[in-house]
Image (cartoon, rainbow, N blue to C red; front, side):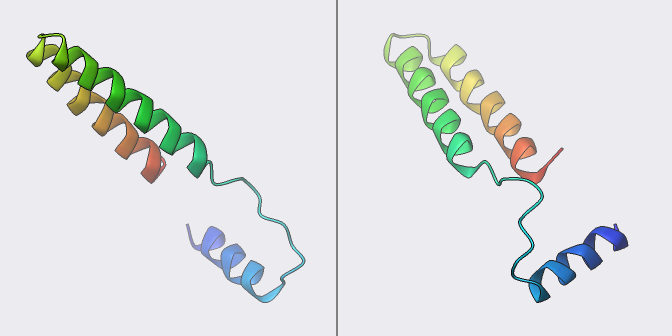
Length: 69
């Protein structure tokens, strides 16, 4: 972990060095929006427990994805 922190610090000092990996924030927002819309549609069609379970499960998955696990 210390080596990664040091590389991050070096990157701040050298502006010409490109990032090693893209953030993927746009894809994360798209997946979250589509998942929430699908679960809301399931709830609107009358299957509230399934829609709620989908929202909870997808929230946990997106949270873990965002923190990098």
